[in-house]
Structure formats: structure tokens, C-alpha cells
Image (cartoon, rainbow, N blue to C red; front, side, top):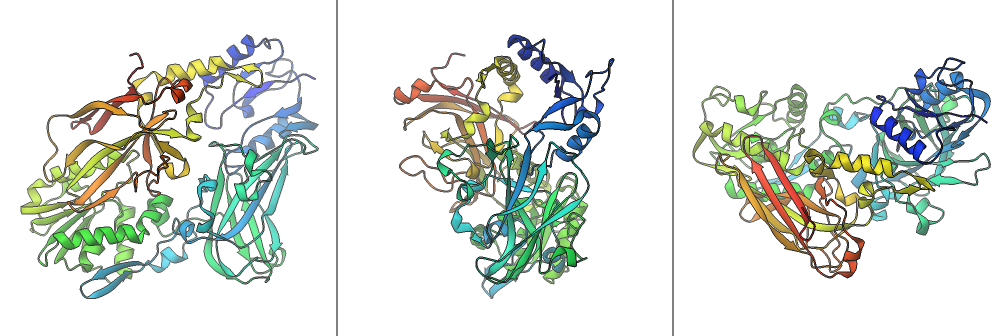
Length: 610
């Protein structure tokens, strides 16, 4: 049968990829059999003068994301069946099935709702309560995709069996219209239904003999043979509200989807008999889910972290303190008020963040106690501060635009800009920050930088060479953010401090530089240097955005689960023979440019040629 290989992208047609595909096809001797069409599939034409002479009888695609349909698989298949393939075509993959499991999990629920926050004061315990509309809000429509195998089973209670929710046969006409699918089940135990864990599998052939599954280890048919993936993971969905469930009392779990999104609801009666089943995708109406991502919710709900700030604040606050808080969507101003500060100002540069904090302050009867200033902190005036001088400048620091750990050094620039508003002897908290690093061996994450070489007998070195050339640009050699609690690794070196930033002083005019070498003390393959920031709230209290405790004897690392760390992959890749070569060294050079706020760095194996 004749066929065409249609190359298309959901957002744009990517010419370099198409050019590489043409070269790969030619190198492997298939130029007379494979035609690369550099178009969206929806733009492909059929006919004697078209891109394809006739409709295809085999449809081979990979249009999936972690949610299965989030990259537009349904409308793409729908169009292909209507315009590009024969009625009884075969599709590879042939079928996909979506599975779900209902659980109770305080940890995962903390990524979606604001919990009451307890503050120990000299007058007793104060509790910061969430506004009613935050508690009733159905949340954000976007899926939370994570490496579910890295979530400890101790962090959730299973409430249902694994339920097959719906299947899609790709060899038949596919519809992108909204639909819902329900499954009746009896809870395995009593608890509070909060979270739906979900994944999918695909059957490549009609008989289902060749299967690819995204199931986590506890639902996998052969956990020892699990394939690590980062392009397809597992999904965490949050129910609109937590609901009590009783063991053995039948319920209906309902999976809803439109053309791009999936969401879930829990029903007491059959959806066929319940006209109130939610058809529209959930939309945040409280602002919080638009401003705080899932890790940020978890960070704000971290009571131990809150206690650290309270402990540090007690050492610097005085009854007559005038406090200025600078962090996006932060509750530090509430902590300062409950600890007895005379006057508290907080700066919120976005209208949405300003609106959210007003709700929180009103719910806690603080709307007349804390002054919210809606402007960029660099633009503050004496009038904004009611003519008062600031005695404590306070920050977490956290800013929503920050991608890499050191981007929150924006706080230092704010401190410099508001210097004129600081009174004599004013305190700054954090007092300082420091940049730290450790050399690691990843268990799996190294694969995202590993060349493909030969794939199932098909030579794709041309693709590897194209990627390598792209990585030769300086911008491509910079660190990239990853939540390392999801990606196990071993430390091969001891962690070390690279640079220190003194927030008690304005940003210096000259760059800050550091260079040196570090010894690898454990055997292993050094894949990358991991970097993070530590904030020194006071001389006795430090918060780390990276390692939370020393590595175990084997080098195992415990990372802050609320933050992304910066990963600088070594280039070229380390020689596997290094496993037998004993200790090696890594050289580094790091420079902070105060005029731009950039940190430029280079890490390499000391015995690697320039």
C-alpha cells in the first residue's frame, strides 16, 4: 500500500525539523518510499496535483501528551478521518484507554486549596483562614502532570480500584465534541475524596498484543520492566470539592472532556439520571489558581516553612516596627501583623494579586490593619508609605516571573530602589542569599540530553547533530529548571557555596565572580551540576530552595519539593569509562552581572579540552 509520512506540529510547521527528516529518510535509503510534507495535517491536499495522490489506508501518528488529548489529538484525528484516510483504515496506535483512581491525599490537596495557617504569637495562636470563595472555587482547568512514581504511597490513601474510564478507537471516526463517561464503583475504604490519579495506555495493534502503558508502579503489570518517560507522565486532577465517601457505598466517578481538556467529578447517582452533571470545564473564579501554581500552593501551605519565618521575625520585630513586604501574593504581611508590628505595608504590582490579598485580609478582618499598595515597588513614594520610614523590609522572596532560582534576586534590586525609604538602622529580611551547587548523577533525567543514534535500526544521527549544534549556543548551555524531587539523583561531590549576596547593602556596581574546582568524592557518571539558592533570614535561620539535608551515605538527595532547581548539564556528555576512573574534578566559573541581573556560568570536567 502507498503511504505518506505527514509531519506537522500543533502550533507551527518547523522547517529545520522537516529538513532533518528529509535528510534522515535519504540517508536510510527510503527517499523513494517516504515523502515528507512540511505542512499542518489540516492543510494537506489529496488528488493528482495534491500532496498525496489518494487517501491513505494506514494512519500513523503520535499526537499525545500526558493527558492524552491535551495537544489536540481529537480534532487532528477527526480531520484526518474526514479528509485524509480511507473509511476502513488501520491506525497505529490502534486504541487508547484512560484510567483513573480516586484517592485521599493531604499532600496533593495542598497543591490546590489554601489551608488554615497557624501562627504562634505571644497572645496565643492566631489562624489565617482562607476566604469562602477560595474554598468553593473548582480550581484551574489545567492538568497537574508529575512523575507519580516519586510520590510516596504514604502520601495518599487509595479509595477506589483502578477504573477504565473511556477508550478511543483511532481506526474509526473520532469526535472532538464534549462528552462524559462514568464508572460505578464502591469505595475500598471510608475517607475524603479529593484527588483523581489518571494515566493511559495505548494498544499499537488491533489485537492489543503490543501495548504501551503509563501506569504507575502500583498499577503496572510488571513494575520491574517499567520504562522511564518524561514526555508522558501521569495526571493529578483535583475534584471541585472534597467529599466524604463511605466504604461499600456505591458512587459514580465521571470523566468529562472537551477537545483539549479532561476533568473529573464525583456523583452520588447515575449521570444518566442526574441532569446537574458538570459539562463545562472548571474555571477559577477566586483568582488564587490564576496567581499561584501548584508548587506555590504547596509552599504557602507548608506549616514548617511558615514556622521558620515566624521564628526569624520574632528576632527582628519591635512593637513600633514599620514593615514593608515585597513578594508576589505573599502572606508575610499577615504574619508580621499577628506578631505585633505597628504598621504593615505590602506591595502587589498586579491587580489580580491585589484583589486576592484583599479577599484574604477581609476574611481575617485585617482589611483596615494592612495597607496594600498596588504598584511596582520601584515606584513607591513617601505618600504611599504615609510619610513613615520603613524599619523592616521583608520578603520571602518570591516573584511569579522567576524561572530559575536566582531570578528572585529581584528582591535585591527592590531593596536598592527603596533605599531612600529605609529608616536609620532598618533591618532587611532575608539578610543575605547564597548560591550553592552540587555535582550529581541522575538515575534517568540524563536521558533528555542523550543522543538517539540508531533507533530500531533507523539511523537518526542527523537529528543528534542538529541538536548538538543548537546546544553549542551559549544560551543553550545555560541551566534549565527542573523539580528534582521528581528526578532521583546521587550527589558525587559535596555541596559547595559559590556566591553570596548581601541584601543589607544595595546591589554593587561591579560583577561578583567565583571560579575553582570541586572534587568528585563518589564513583559515578557526572551528568550535571545542580544549583539553588539559600536565603539567610537571620544569622541563625536559613531556608534552602535546594538540598534540605545532607546526602545519605550513597549520595541520595532530598530536594525542596516546592521549588525548581537549576540543572546545568555537562557538555560533552561524560565518558562512561569514568565509572572506573576514580575521583575526578569539575571546574566552574560563575559571574553575576549587576547591570542585568544575569548569572553566567560554565561547568566542565577539568580534564575535558576547551
